[in-house]
Length: 299
Image (cartoon, rainbow, N blue to C red; front, top):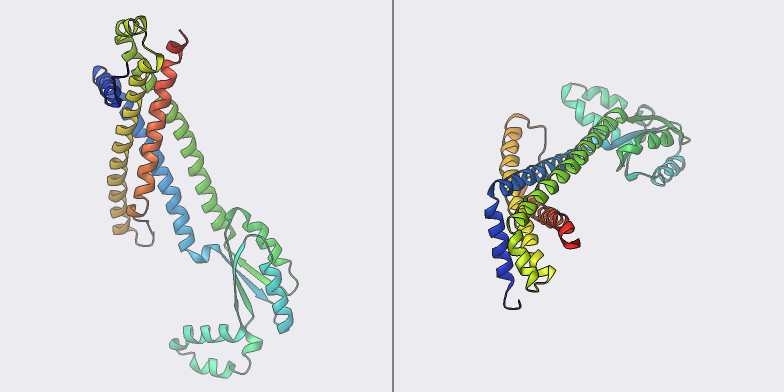
């Protein structure tokens, strides 16, 4: 048996694939569907996170300080904010900076004289403000509560409802994605198992002779394992091609009609997605073929 090389087992795998062409095609088709759906949901979640990070105002909370607070108290409030959990960045906008921002924003609309009159009283008109950026949308309510209970804080503006809605949408997509993935993964393994079983049945006499003359189990099993592996490789490669063209097609539609939405380019996820598709395809193929041969190996 030593004269048989790796190419022998690969050839036998392709031979088994060809002998049961209909079931092999069904196995590849189901697995491709599973991988494309998985990749689509994964890219959707990734794009949601990307847009959430791009929309900086959605993950920012404006904290306004009481006008009567001294510089020392403002500094203490700053330290308390920075010590809170879920705070990723804190920017302090002073009264003078707020005044200048409003002057630049409204000065062109004919309010220049008004701002000139308020120049001396700007510290009594505007408030010190802290722009607090957070990282976890699921804990925004807790952070908002903590900020509003800091001594010296007079008002907190937060897009809590928007952040929670986006978080719930993302969690819902992940939940649906997980269930679809599990169902299709099980179906893929089931179809591959039946494909391998048909191949084993078609070669039952040949296998009996091989066992009679002393062939080892691994020598008999390896061609079927390679058959499952080949199914996984073909499905992974085909799914990657389908996902690429489907994603780029949707990307062109979105960029043409919805300029406010940012979509990541496929090139940025191309290599990780290809590795994931091939890896999952190979794992599914080998697992399906191994499970289908379990009963035979115990015989």
